[in-house]
Amino acid sequence: MTRRQAIRAAYEDACRREIEALKPGNVHLFADGHRMTAQEFLTSAQVSSDPLTDPTLSLGQRIVEAVRATRAAVGTNTNLGIILLCAPLAAAAAPEGGRLRERLGHALQAIDLDDTAAVFEAIVLASPGGLGAASTHDVHERPTVGLLEAMRQAADRDRIARQYISGFADIFELGLPALETAIDCGETGMWPAVHCYLAFLTAFPDSHVQRKFNLETAQKVRNEALSVHARFLSAPDDPRRIELLSEFDARLKERGINPGTSADLTVACLLVHNLGGRLAQLSG
Image (tube, rainbow, N blue to C red):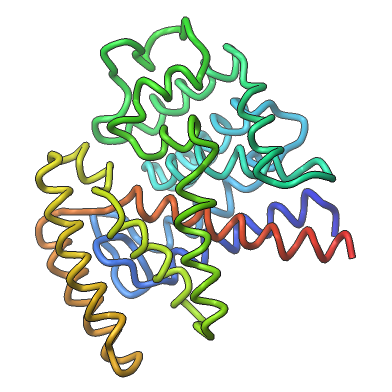
């Protein structure tokens, strides 16, 4: 297996594991939602993995081509946030040597105006709810500043944008520890991903919910998640955990609430975890 093949497999596996996990309010194998199906997300992962890991493309081109491939395959925005998070990680994983987070910083710093224009094009193609028009930078226009500065302008209202200016802090310092602690404690199957998702959902208001509704609604969802999480942690067995999460899932979907940012961040954590294992096998 080549290094690119290992990165591509790590990405596809991360997307699959996220969609297999019962993530309240989000699309998963237990229940579709928000006019999207789990199969659309699985298809999106397969078709986006080729451009996302293409070493001949710049980071911006990886992002826009992955979005184009997704739109052609499923006709809807299933994975813009996933692509925005995972493309830099995939690019950073390609070179050998050094720590992934350090290489990620170099990849982000190397983004130029052409990359920025490509990312803006990807956002317009995906047309996610409410994302795009900022008071300073509009993705419908040719960028006049680099992507990191544009992300800085959006960071207070978009958690994915915040990752670009924080060195993916939420991934490496919150989600990944939750994921790996769950694994170390013996959790298997979907449960490490569930723990990771709940770590994000309880840590801060989901920015996708905030964008679609308002901060008050996003904070209310976080408070509900904190209550569910406490009961989840004390549940006696898996059937009770599934029951708790399914009930919360139904309540959120009845209100049209989709904590999509928390799900996207979860995919990125799964990718980082997978990269550690798969690339170590190549080196070994």
